[in-house]
Image 1 (cartoon, one colour):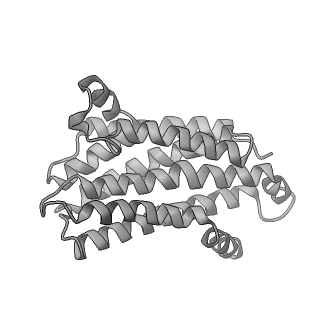
Image 2 (cartoon, helix red, strand yellow; image 1 turned 135 degrees about the vertical axis):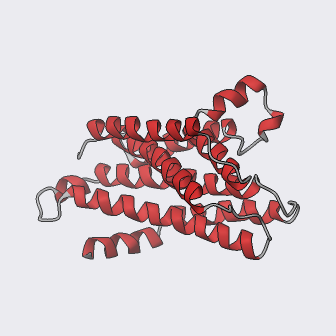
Length: 230
């Protein structure tokens, strides 16, 4: 608990945490004034952006920085094992993603009159699998990056191509068919596509759910085998 309190204070002072909250909100508010009442694209897009920022920027940068500074190595000699710090960080980053998405849903539902999903279970399942897949990528970056700066750079380099392929930068209907098809099966593309299906009142594609689950499982295993404490 003491470790969690310390990490919460550190996270609250991190500018990146504020950006992860404000950037998706800025996109939602700026474009939300022009959306139609039944829009099923903007809010899912903002949710996917929020999770992607936390998973590919905040999570790997923080963990790689801790290893670079020797914090994990020093913790291994104390009763507070380094594994405890990893668990706390994962939970805090998950809470940050949930907070960002909760704010988006609140603003969209109350101020913008955006459509919310009618079925809770498909929405929760999609969010869990999509977030797990994106967090697995963040963990893999943290496992392989030699320091915090390189983890930050790799996360950014991965985020923008994935966001483009997922239709978060350019509408999917304006992309070449082959590019849109490839993007549909990327981690962020499967996540965003499933969210759009949920918001449209449809059952998420089992194939896309399986794609997200596969990414989460396989990449998590690779990240766990590759992770170094120092």
